[in-house]
Image 1: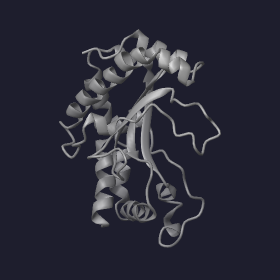
Image 2 (image 1 turned 90 degrees about the horizontal axis):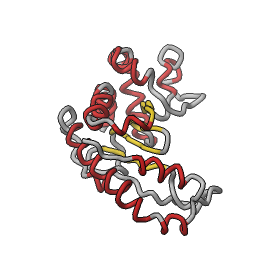
Image 3 (image 1 turned 60 degrees about the horizontal axis):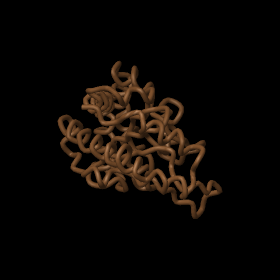
Image 4 (image 1 turned 90 degrees about the vertical axis):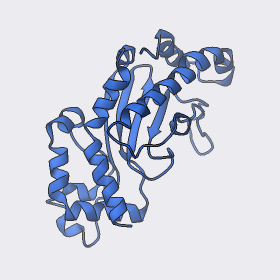
Length: 223
């Protein structure tokens, strides 16, 4: 099934240089039909594909999709709209602290990824503890050919200094320094014109499912 047309790309290309309410209001019909409705259907069907290998994902598309409006209250960038649409496909909410999957589309790229992006101090401790105790399992996951070919490595901001018991092991286990644990890759935006788009994206996410499962185990076992 083809979800998107050329106007989806054109809308975001034009929004980049017309990021203000007057232009958006004039083009709201385009946004509703070719962006909002199309993206919601895509995410709905993608969730069904993900559930085939990850049955813990129970979220509905409406709860996974981010608003296009930006929160400009504390930002120097006062543009009212994002130049993309995105969704975080997790268990029940895009706001929960739970390893999930992320998709984003803009005028140039389709982004596919997931993992854990924001962690509380307690959750970060649990993940680091799991890495310390089960380093061999994590190494096996990230050195798997399917994961490595698509994502290369675990991404995320890092601490420069760690406290005991992790600092003694940071040299031989560099991922202990991570404050975030996510994976990401991008494709040309022309990819969205594939008839098998949801299957294609789900297959890319499947390659990282073992990492998400590892991260979930860390949070659950440390509870």
